Image (cartoon, rainbow, N blue to C red; front, top):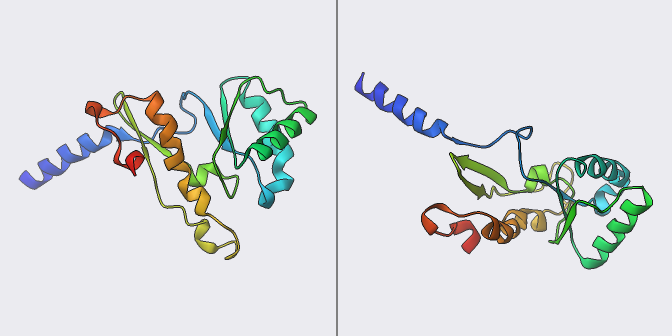
Length: 162
């Protein structure tokens, strides 16, 4: 009975730490612009960006200044205004930020970023599909998080300090 009580208390404490669902209120949507592997999906990404920026800011990662300029031109050519997009030059390999991006974790009013190792889908799409840059995206995101969030007890996140 005593060990069961401890287990219940631990579960209750752990239940406060959570990853908010994608559909919950959030400050912005983060996306990676489709590179060479997903070039055919750019029109679909443009449509998604067009809709999202009507409701919230879009943070869009591109690998270089020239890729950003090409993406902005593509969006304009497809009727997508650049009215609510914040651009970030962060090298990426693929467009699937949901798979490789930062995982936001909350506990009450505290928020932090988890960084899970991204292995380019375990090589399931071929050994030539890179993922090294994608694996670094959450750490790049920490640079922005430091400016936006107050971390617990004024400590810095060890992930962001690496």
